[in-house]
Length: 157
Image (cartoon, rainbow, N blue to C red; front, side, top):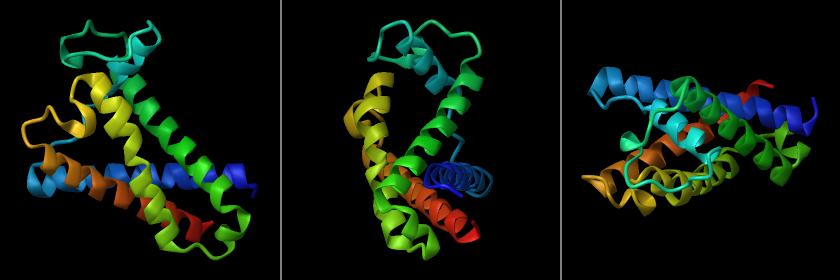
């Protein structure tokens, strides 16, 4: 399996792990699941030339925004997996080590904190939310689970 395909596979595995984590938190702790419709709305507005919103919920809806949000979520997971695979190289897949995937998982939160969240009106690193530190920690945990999914998928390849 080539490095690009292996990267895509681990990206999907990491994203599935993150989604299962969100489902578990919702079921066991009432955490609530991510609103991929708002993400899709943001992506839809990107195609119209607008990156930053005061409140994405107040922006005009985009046709198919929920599906667009889910597709974007998985596309980003695949891109992160491929970039990681290109960074670590094919040898990593012969003997995957968790700590490298974990560092990458933590690095990937920057995309949310410094582009997606401010773009949706949530502020840099979620600074405009009700409890910024809580959602930051939850994000770091979710990206750690993403890393676990990257690593576990690589072990299965």
